[in-house]
Image 1 (tube, rainbow, N blue to C red):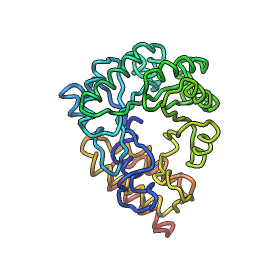
Image 2: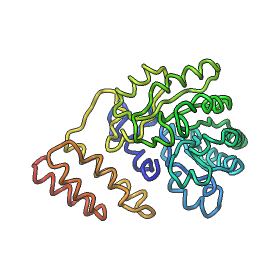
Image 3: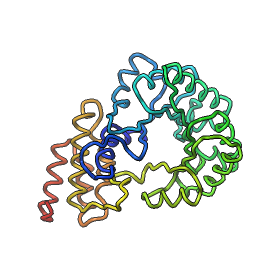
Image 4: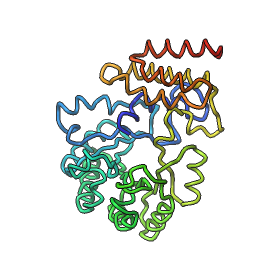
Length: 321
């Protein structure tokens, strides 16, 4: 997710979703994390790569770590795959699902649903680039059911599965549906059936509307998919993947929110706007007394110091600090 799954966001999950709930980075996670999606044209350009280095930053605690890339030029994908492999990533994911007009306009992301031949060329080039770097990088695809209707899913999925990809993550909506309708999880079950009939080893991951770890496990059980991908459901909840049902109280929630803000400021503050944190403040601040008022104040916070001052005043007023 652009301007969401940055280094600081991912690091919070490494710290707070590990089994011991120890606020120290884990050495290995039971879940996989992805970078923000990276344009291959930028990554393969000397000046562009310098600008993208911050988006490719990751820690050992964030493993398994997958770089997600997008574009429309197979040759650029091959070159980008070499760079990513050399950086030590655990896998490469190709975004063929983003429905935004900028990406669609150049024939990338979800536009590839209408161009399966180019999609296959991109996959082949990415695999070739990963292998030429000296190790076989797992290559996966994130996409949608179809462009205009869900009936497109079978043909589209078969063209991807035929490429022997490591994993296929399917957002259970079409490009046209965006996020405006409930996810069609029945189509994920159909996708699993197609995979099994083709007898390919590709794992299937479903995506769409998952709001809790428990719901994700239930969806996996009912569809037979190998896992679920969580996006919006993780906002403001770095404890999401804990297995013991832990839910933080208000004091803990706000303490971790400030830790997140401090980490963002320390690691990304020189190159990214602090305003990016506002979407996280909105997620952290919900469901408790005074959260609406606190959230409104944080939406106007210009920097870390102002954020700390606002939260301090709130906790003092409720005597929960």
